Length: 619
Image (tube, rainbow, N blue to C red; front, side):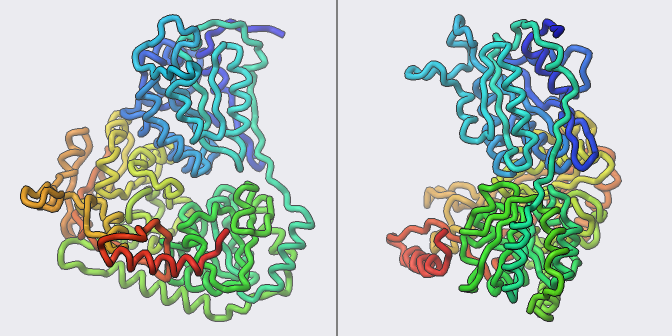
């Protein structure tokens, strides 16, 4: 066996450049680039290797480590996890800036390889700049913070350890059930150490995604439960999208007359006008989806984590006869809510069910069509909503959805009240264009992920719809988009604060406190003075993007039309009314309301909360 003498970092780059993924006979290059910010802990090691010729990995200069990682997440998500990028940083603050993004990747099951620089393995110069010393455990560094948010974690303390570390890293990154953030910490001295690596380590490696075939027993059990049900209901989760099972879901629901509701990750897998698509389900779901879910006696939970927003904190399925079938390639999710676990590929399982339950038909009758028509009328009303204070947030979404944006534009969001509104009312006309991060609901994901989505789909318009809070939290990758000459359109819905949380706060009887963007009042000492006014268009112009403004429907239309014609990034500052988002539709969400308070309204809210908890399933 021949060997090649390389530094650990050089070997890492060469290995990454030779990873491929095969799904259903289609082979693609799996790792295509690296986002990062160089510091002393990585620039002369991994940075040297990336700067050298002889590889095809493109380096993207992030402006914030978390932003670069979110861009990598958006890229992998928009590619349906069939392509990915790595992210690197220096030690200390640079590395810790990526921890939030690692959590976002893991919760959403998106493959991202985190390569933070680490303290010297030899310890000779310790403590080096930015090193966090733990007096009781010298093996612990800042990078141990990634352990809680990574699906695999490792530290390469010797150059030869890279080989087993990378094999295990890609075992997880290419596992459709277990994928997420993978962190491999790179001590800065070891990055530059040379080793004679075996040539075979650098050979082309194809990772095969094998669909988990449902067994006859799984099919028989599910068909038996389906035949016993009168009002079955399907939850379309993200697993339907990643399994490419949209067509199978449509055929299954049409054949047996079964409605389905969409999770945030599953939304957009099937067009909005499918007769069985009742739009979003759960706490941020539609009236149609939630009304029928309450009556269902069998829930087919396909590719969903069954999070509290989807299940209304396990309160939504109120039919005492309701049983749950968990169809999922991840056993952890398939077993949730005491479900009958069917650990199998969504596409193959739906196809098998479609072929195996012939003669069955649900008892929903015309209730599905009536519920959908009722909801469509409500969406039409919301899309035409007028507000006396400023533009209605839902009206803005309606204008964008129905009139202004191309049908194939990719829309990206992830936090605040915008995801709630969009899950309910957004009408997806081209599949794969609804891009929402709502597993972690990470503020600041939107703009960076839009850049990642644009890198994934360079020929498409990519539009971030973001609140003022999330924009302020993290918009640095707007500068990266300017640098890379990648056109993204950022629409900032400015309602002067964290109004989504203000709504929650006030709904539990608490006074408005700390969520609206107000100047401090000198007499009260609280943040309840005049509103803080921000010009986001000017902010965009300072980055080198085009800044536009809209305070009326006509101005919005003109701004969007101009943005679509621009060649570079655009930010549209849209002033919206603070309380103009949609409200709940037959939903409930459990929060930890104070049981004792000097405020009677808070105590009343706690009593109401306890009453609803008694209606929810316990596990």
